[in-house]
Image (cartoon, rainbow over all chains, first blue to last red; front, side):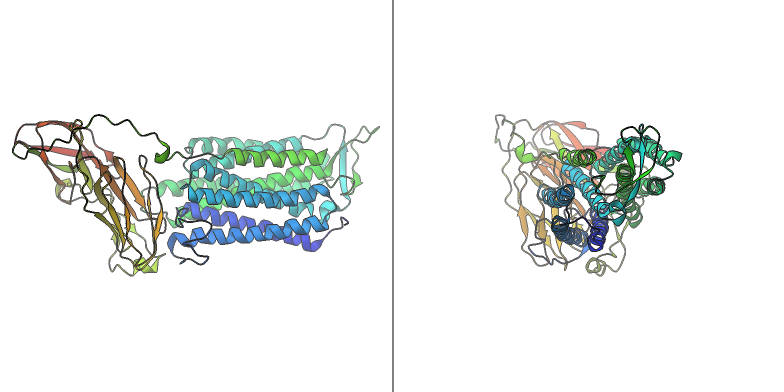
Length: 311
Length: 260
């Protein structure tokens, strides 16, 4: 086993991550259409693999089918990584992804069997976001960029980007939990609204530090920061639209398409915001390194994936 | 070292997810309240009285909203005219339908035999008929699917056992009972999210559901002082009213809900 870039594996990891985003959208459609219990049994649907795809059954069984596919893709990815990767931590990460998708499937089953207990539903949403981030990380770690001679910026006192980005990840994750808690009626709207006021401060602090002039030699970090900032802006707009659509249709006899659209988009872009912040953290680990012994000033130096422990 | 830090970040996010896991209490887990001494004294028809009245909506009723069944052709094709939601059904002079008027207090420890006849809740045209039903504790409720499409029947009680059953077209009737008094249990179909009904469950027979004239009559009440409440699916319970009736006496009262 050698750690050479495997394009096929990298593309497959990207595909699995994209499929997982699709899975998140499918899950959000279930919640927004109030279809979580449209199929009373689990793991089968109406005792079958092919129930009538009508009304809420379309969303709930569709979500199960997309999830099954995500599980199969993750099995293939974990096995592929374990066979091709010499980096032990990568093999462990592959199995962690598989563990996460299995846990996620079981949580999904519990939500059906126990009539959507709010905090189990929140956990289901949270593991979904974590699983998506693991797959995004796997896609990054299998890229040729990650495994190539990347110019590492060495500082005796490193710029604050990494710490700020980690804080942004934690803040976004908590905000996603609060959003899920609101959607699943575990908490009211206020905590999520307060989070929406606080999270941008953490994110903008992280993205501004990616533009630190000392990081000019690491354009990848600045690019990730820019992506994070733009995704956050889109997320804030979608959050406002989702709230407006929810309030304006609250007396409707059923979930209205405008509310479903904005809420699902808000959920999906929330996942992208978290993933973008995770990328900033990971890339900062890749391009920033501690000063070598005897080195005082910043001096960008090439470093391979092997040298950095590929992180 | 870096890899360890990375693992720590991932582990914390996963741990946060898993610890968010909780558990919903169900009625099954609640300890049963100790039963008080009960009296199965029959009501003497020679002295029994009645309470009559009307329920009104004070103010303009919200405009009834159209239910959109486009996503389910099996439902849409059963209606030639638009189907409106039944949360507010208002008749002449603000008379409010689908209100459960019931005796909340005043019967003491009297007990009543459970009726054996079933109360039917039909899924017809992808709408629950009737919109509100009232039954006695442990009285059978028969749920029928008259539609050519699959439904799921999902009561969401707070004081009874929650259940969720599928009912394909031409499937067997679902017959269920509710063991505890509860006003009222929302019933949902998650396949068709506009479908909503309510089942009110009582320990006694002193309740009525108003029709479009908003009128009710609770008969065969033994003389005494009673507390009455009117309950509406959206507006909730009304203020309580105390009524004292003597032998063979009939008293009239009126409930009024403020439009929201």
